[in-house]
Structure formats: C-alpha cells, structure tokens
Image (cartoon, rainbow, N blue to C red; front, side, top):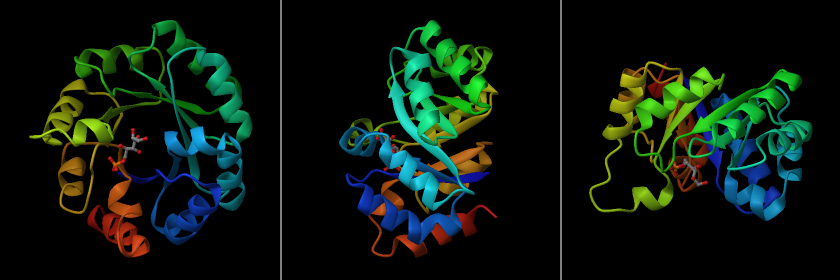
Length: 207
Ligand SMILES: O=C([C@H](O)CO)[C@H](O)[C@H](O)COP(=O)(O)O
C-alpha cells in the first residue's frame, strides 16, 4: 500500500517546507484543494519541480469541464488528478481522455456520494486509475463519524482504491487490511508536532 500525504495548507512556501520534511517517507504528494484554490496550479509545478521522482496528485475535485481541468493540471506537472464521483459520466470520461493523452491517471473522489460501491464500479468502468473512498473534513467533524464505513465500502467494491478521511497512526493498519492501494493522510501529518516523524511512523506501520 502506498502512502499519500495531503498538503492541505494555504501557501506554496508552507507546502514546499512540509513536502521537504516528509517526501522521503511518502509515495504520493497531494496538493490539497484549498492550496490549489489559494495559489493556483503553480503550486503543483513547484512541488513537482522540487520532488520530480514523487507521484504528484492535484486534488482538483473537478465537477465540470473534465477534459479541460485535467489537461491544465497535467500540463502543470500533476501525475494524478481528482474528479468528483458526483460529476456526470461525461466529465469523468473527458478527464480520463486528458489523462490518456498525457499518459497519466484520474482518481475519482467519492466524497458526498451516497452509494459509494455502485459509483466506484461505474467510475472504474470509465477507466479511472483508482477510486478514492473519502469522507471530507466537514463529514469527519460530524458526531459519530467512523472510518470503518469507508473501509467496508472499499472492500465491497472490488476496485483499486484509496482511503481518505482522518487516516492516522491508529487506523492505517485497518486501511491496509481492507485492501486499499493508497492511504491518504492529511491532518495526521500536517498537524503533528513533528510531521516528519508522523510520516515516518505511518510508513513504518504499513511495511
Ligand atoms: O481532500 C481532503 C479534504 O477534502 C480537504 O481538501 C483532504 O486532503 C483529505 O480528507 C485528507 O485529509 P485528512 O482527512 O485530514 O487526513
């Protein structure tokens, strides 16, 4: 299982600093949606230039104009780009077309999707590289939130998948046991007192 760090920060400077501390311990570096909205796609370019051997994920969360939005993110240096599972099939198909022309990949993010198992299968049939079983920051803040629901859905869907939604040192083992291909950790790393140590421990927990 790969480890993906989500850089949910607001400046390129802070993102470069955090990536510099944790890159050695992660496989995928994600430019979070708030960072891309705050700084634009130059954030993607800056991270790819600083870490050319890492897989760089632009969390675009595209909802429309799939081919166009994916194309500009790939041109900026992304290796993976996210499209929302709630988008129309044509939006996912357009983004996949852009990915294929760049020899890169699309990740379909199931944030806000009620029937995640069915939509995961549909998105995979549209040639998404993998499917992200994701509970966003707002959903995680609801009383009673439990990562287990995402893991059960991921297991049931039988597609290549990642899990995001409060993955941390105490849950990453369960993410791996569920058969995930990628574990995504944002706040468990960027909010840690020692982000490098946090990333190192998460990586060690899955090896
Ligand atoms: O995608 C994310 C969220 O929607 C904000 O952009 C996060 O990067 C993702 O949820 C991982 O972060 P944590 O849940 O803090 O691990």
